[in-house]
Length: 281
Image (cartoon, rainbow, N blue to C red; front, side, top):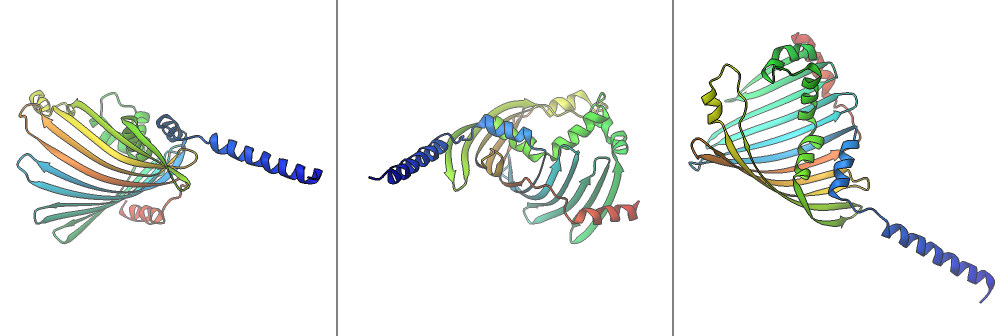
């Protein structure tokens, strides 16, 4: 064997060893790694479809479908959301669409409701100060304007609020490859009591009557990229709520699919919404 051939063979072996070393050292996604990756994300958009079935103690059933296309820029405190909500009960049907945008200082909202075939539309625009003065007092006597803003951002932060809470309260049961992505299967179960706060002028007995026990079970799958960022999630959640005062309750089963994109961009309808709000104002 010539020296040149020996050098060539040795070079090939070195490349193989290095390649195998890279594969073996690839970081497999973990629950903690995904939660940490979520905290590091500054901005994203998402598309969510959710179907809910609510069954009361008497056996009556209501079905709700919700489609949402939204996004949030945590760093600049900007968010937008388009939602389409439909509710069905027996032969009745209700439908609502909404467009919302917050630019860091002013909130724009348009609501379109189909009421028995009659479409009603309302467009509103408020500064953060105006919203805080009008509604902040109902959310807590000591709530500051900064805390009010953070609360609004959390509500629209589906990734850092909804998805993170599900992952935090679940156990990863398997991790598998799906092309270039990893898919994690999760299961979770939590039980807790809650008593929704009511306005101060309401009677204390009424607040006690709202106290209820909640049992929640969730199963699902999460697809993550090589940075452990969620790119898709599918969940089925079953929640049983029982009122302490009467022992009666209801059950809600929801299925959700969420797709995430980490290239944040405002939709084209934002400028149209701002123009309509200016005309209404």
